[in-house]
Image (cartoon, rainbow, N blue to C red; front, side, top):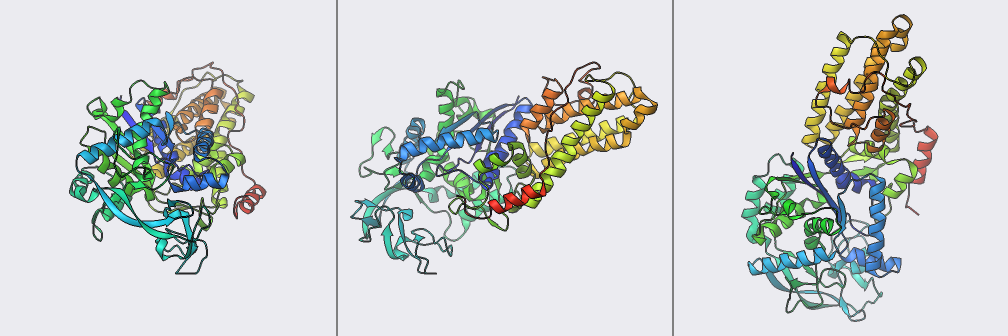
Length: 570
């Protein structure tokens, strides 16, 4: 039994995520976790909410709530939506947990002891009215490039130009609206990543088979321009993990917190501690410490391309720099962006379909299938309502759903609701078994190497084989002249429904469970031996005709959704 540690990039707390966020990390991670479990392997699948940083404070202020209360509420919201999409996390944690506080402070102390943290004096915008330093996103003003009056201190949302707060014309505090801002000196801690450049590059070069997208981004950060730079790991904020050197105070860092990019990846480890503390597991160290059993773990991370630098450089710098025996990632599966109907999904602008809205329209499997079969692996991809409708209607309703419906209804009408006896398989059936075995092995290869779109295509091709067999064998015609031969054909097809339910479960778990239940089979074992799997439901075995597995999307529905989600969400 292989052991797989799987983490998805943790979603930010400030609101409900859109479908682009889902397909860029959590959903393909769930696909891989479900597949590894289905193959009998031991899996620990972890995710959490990313709760610190300026956007959390701003979102809480906008909602009129204390930030801790807001984060707790949004964690619950995101947790329920994840359940709605059938994301099978072993634990869905929180970066604000006591476990992550302790572990982040531990890493900072160890890194400091090893000379990998330095103090830097710098000037930042300060608001006397608010009595605090203002992070970039707490400052707004007029963009010097395009004249947009609500540009942020880090970027103009109108022209997308990257900015510093001092670039803004007439800057003001987002908190109070005060304009009496001034530059003041403050001290911060920096992780000395630059001293680890060679070690990080050597480590990256030992990773086997990483996607080009992952390695190209990492190499660019390592070598472009002045090369890998030190990064600040503290901020002047109220909400966050207080800066401490292990369990000791850090002189000069009073009132400061660790920067979110530093503590968020550490939550992957802390999340495993939360998993044990929630009585869901009994030993988190065997997954994370190579001196406690993690040397035989395969660790896979899933994320969008914007998160790659943190996971290929900054988090490994923390782990390697500590000198402690923590498990490092073996494979990083990164994704490009999913765009929306001619533009971009945008959380801040409310553009596109958000996860809660999607589940109000259709069950999770419809979205899971489309998103995974169109995953933005080699390039950005685009969601369009026309494509979504066509994929659901053709792949799910016409191919898989129709197969299950035709077979079970025909059997009920001619043989009753039990697997019929009689007849012997011939050359046509042998050819089907050979083709199906080949397609299943292809599917397994793509799933193991996390080639998501290729896996979806192989799975669909396996469904198609069943339909082609049904059309070719035509049991409804055979029945008129040779009922026993028709019985054999239907017996094989009923077993194919069960086989499809098992192999499709990583993609469409609800539909798979429905079909397995309809076949009255509690056996969800993987079909290592296809001929054996196709005779698992014996003659006389009772089954039920399933309800409609997937319904078709009408043109009127599609047009209505397209119009409803064309603008800002209300």
